Every structure is written in C-alpha cells, then in structure tokens.
Image 1 (cartoon, rainbow, N blue to C red):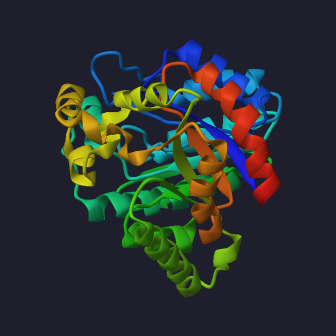
Image 2: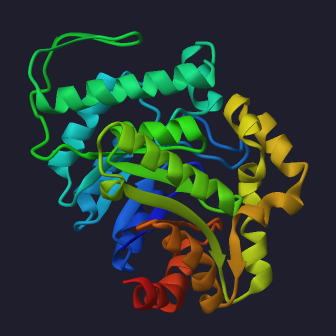
Length: 331
C-alpha cells in the first residue's frame, strides 16, 4: 500500500507548493502527485505553474518520494514527444521512481492555450491511446518514425532515455477510458466521492480491457485521489472545502467550460455542494472507515487531496492521527 500527497497546482503558488510537498514527504507520505493546469478552476486566487518544470525542481530536493502527474494531458497543448522527453529527463533527475499520469483533459487547459477546437470524447480517447504508443517507443527506441492519425515523428531520438521507463497511469471516469487502461496502461487513476457503483463498473471495465489484450489486470496499479478535509475543528474542515466547489460540478460542466471565471461562477452558485466530494471529519477513525471501501475494491495507492489553505496544519494532523491508523489497518 502506498500513501501520497496531492500537490494542487491550481491552488498554490509555485514555491509554496514545493514546500508543502517536501513537508508531505517528511511526514511519511511516499508519493507526490501534481496536477497540470494551464488555467485553474478559479480565476480569483488561482494558480497554474507548469507541472513538468515544477517536477524538475521537486526532483532536485526530494529524498526518494515517487513523483508524477495526476494528471497531465499529452495530446493537445503538449505534443507526446515533448512529454516523453520531459519525463525521460525527470527520471534521470529524480532519486525516486517517476510516473506519468495522463488524462483526456479539460477545455479550460487546452483551448485557450492553442485556439484549437475542443474535440469530442472519442477523439480525445483515440489521441491518448496514440500518445501512449508514441511515448513508449521514444523511451525505448532510436530514430523513431511514427505515422499516426494525430501525431508524426521522423527519425526521432531521445538522447537521454530513462534507464527504467516511467509507469504510465491513465485517468478514467467512463467505461471506454477504463478499458483503455486495461489494454495499455501500467496504472489506473480516479478520484473519490462519487457513487460507489461507479468504481465497481470502472474496475470491471479495466479488467475487461486487460483480458482482451491478454494482460493481467491484477498487475495494473490502482491509484485513487481521496479528497479529505480532516481537522480537529469541524467548522474549519467544512470551510476548507469551499475553494474547491468546482469539483462538485458535473463532468460536462468541468470538461467543456473554458473560462475560469465561468467555472468560478458555476461553483459559487452552489457553495453548499463544495463539501460533497470530500470526507469531512474530526474523527480519525471515521476517516479510516470511510477510506476502507476504496481499499476493499482493490485501490492500492491512496493520494490524499486536502482542500484548505493551511496545508501544513493538515499534514501535521493527518500524519499524527490518520496515517498511523491507515498503516495499522491496511499496511
């Protein structure tokens, strides 16, 4: 079992985010997963440092934590070959393992940066599957000629390939993306706080995709971002969720809205929904009990996303009260 920290690049300034992540490693969390946004969920008070640059700085200062993205979109504002090169470099810089967590993206990160139209879900999935193939070839081959539907390379070589290619994790919230995980990914990423039957369905589709590709579904790592607001003060724990009201929007609202101002307006229209995606509690045993169903489903990497501004307080309380209980119960 692995326990990690979600470095929320949408919420915190670059250096501050790095200091929080270093504190997370010191507190006993062994994975640092950073989000990659061109624009944040909120216009006012939001941030959006470049994740691949930030990861290089983190690699230079970490003492062995696993580093990666949750998630990056390697298909539109980034060409897959540049993602492959960046993560090959990161793998050489980092003293710990590196993973590339990818997803099909949101319009707010891709359309404003490129001016390109936002493609439909099918095209986004096809682009991601093609990107995975190209990235893996660039990590392991020289003079790569690639002729795909969306991407091309000609005699492309990464002159510093990783000694051990990073694991590729794919985020999925629907059945077709989950089947792609089973066919092509080393790991699966999803987020907590949704209907329990969704996770059962997604994992079944991961297994189906793996079986059809002749792969062992049990070897695919299963990472879930668990959204938890733990504090000794319940009102403070509830207030901490307000910044993240956008997470309670529908998938369609989140994926198709390009403007952070509009996302902020949509989220603030229903502030009471902000805490619905989080485990909000002052009781460490309750927190563990509410995490348990995810472990029982087979998730073996738990990355904790704390919503509040005072991340140091969260890390201190969580590592003191909750983390030892998690290790005692789940290993």
